Image (cartoon, rainbow, N blue to C red; front, side, top):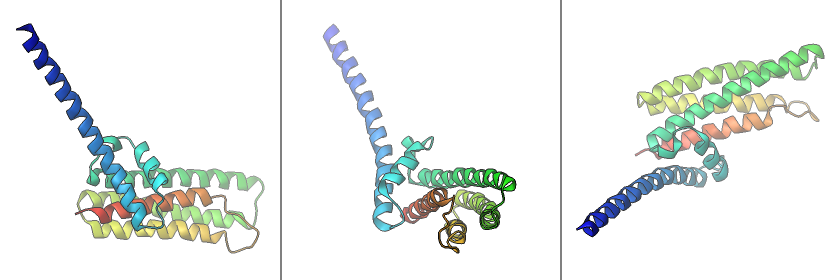
Length: 185
């Protein structure tokens, strides 16, 4: 009789183990699949960047497609806010030794990022209300803002933008969010 109880216990424990692992595989598969499809359909999305960025977001390991969309919008907000703070620090440093070329462009970028952060907040709100066309418009304006910021530094030859990496990250995170938005059924 004790063998029967032991077999039942082992079967029950094994069932829980399998169910737990299937749930993890399923959730991780959603993230992987979303990134694979995004990278395949959008030349602005790199698979490794998508996987690393979304996997770093809290809750992504158990997120479904809708939740991944919300997380991707949060990632844009975090990165855009971080970039704005970085611009503020650069502007403070520029006050000490102002560069007539860099300072006005940084000021322009700061304004663009203020608008972009507001647009991301609006996009998150609209996403929660399932108003996907509005989300698309708001996120597209974020892409325009970071592109305009970066282009401002290309006006004079020989100058390099101090924001290239950050602008690129915000742009790509936005491309990921838009791609996930287009994956919804």
